Every structure is written in C-alpha cells, then in structure tokens.
Length: 180
Image (tube, rainbow, N blue to C red; front, side, top):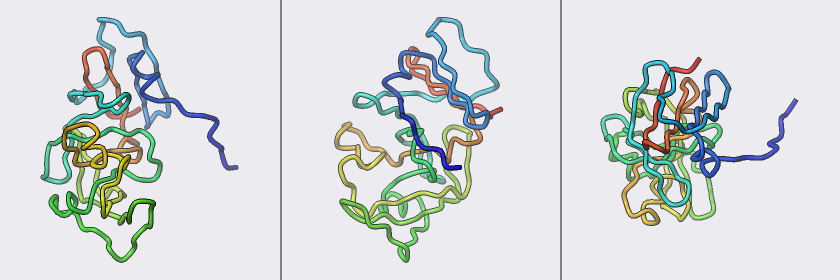
C-alpha cells in the first residue's frame, strides 16, 4: 500500500513549540515553551539560527571540512545532504559525474560522502546530491546569497533517521540525541 501525503507543516508551526522529531521512534512531540529543560538522553547541543522566514541553520561538517554553516531540512526524502560540486571536491567527496540528474537550473550529481556530521553525530556513506551550478532555492549553498552567509550543505531526512532532534527556538539550540 502506498501512502499519499495528506499535508505538510514545518518551521512556521514548530517554532511556536519545543519541537522534537524522533526519527528512530517515528514520533513528533510538540511541547509548550517553558523555562524547564526537557528530559532527554545525552545530547549534542548545537547553535541554532533561523534564516529567512523558516530555514533552521547550525554547524556541520563534510568529512574534515568544517564545522561550517549548514541548513537543516527535515524533508528531502531519500537523501542525506545537498551541496555543490565545488564544495564536495573541496571536502574530498567523490562526485559521480557518470550519472547526472537533469534539474531545472542545472545538473545534480550523486555523491556518497564517507562521513558527515552535526556535532558528534556522524553518518557514513550518506546518499546525496552535488549541484553543478547553484540556483536560487537550491537547499543549503543555493541559499547563501539570499541569507548573506556561506552555507556548505543542506543536511536532510536520511541523516536524521537514527536520531531524535529537538528544535529550541527560545534558547536557539538544536539538540541531537540517539533515537528510541
């Protein structure tokens, strides 16, 4: 049976709550914002910035390149990150030029970085895309001009699968814990 998407909501709703997306446990928890810290497993506490009207950003690394600014995109089904060919090569990530994916605005190339990380949370051999040319709206590096700061990547759905992530828009922190 194929499930059809019935709708979507994201940061514009989430920033009204202390939001935990437990990918591993397949749960979403929306708690009232209070001064009391939520009970959680040991977690990496990363800085959280909100760019534009709804783009969460934090610090991430592509192999040994970083930590630098990245966007956090909890959508992006089927991939773990987006970046550019230039940044992938700078980070030592092999780009699969033999299998281009044509997109409006340019080509994407498959990548599978050996290691990417947010804090101490590491994923290996993550499927992703490297854009030949940055085009407006391309997650992560394609938003650098719009936001006024450099982004090296967009970390997305597949990266988060073994984790629970909590967005604290009051103290501007992103917590990443092992999922349940």
